[in-house]
Length: 130
Image (cartoon, rainbow, N blue to C red):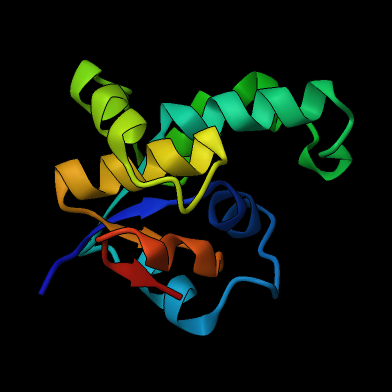
């Protein structure tokens, strides 16, 4: 059965760099050609922000060429819609990171499984895979 997955920022970067930090279950699901894999505009925003601050030196040229890497991986872009923004703003205050709140809202609104190691997402009413 095909699944629709949304990668959190770390999962996306770990996939790109074939990091052993990506769990086996996540690697299998993302690599399954039957699954649709999405990367949010929020991930592009987070990568660009952290790269500007010097917090992602290992990201190389990903901040400038993220669309290339999304396409090369066979993933799909997920833009931020007004409904996503409203939902992110209305989520409970259990998690304050704006990027994570947006990913949670998008996963919820679009009925996507969020691929993430971050246990903080469990505070939201979404399906998580790791």
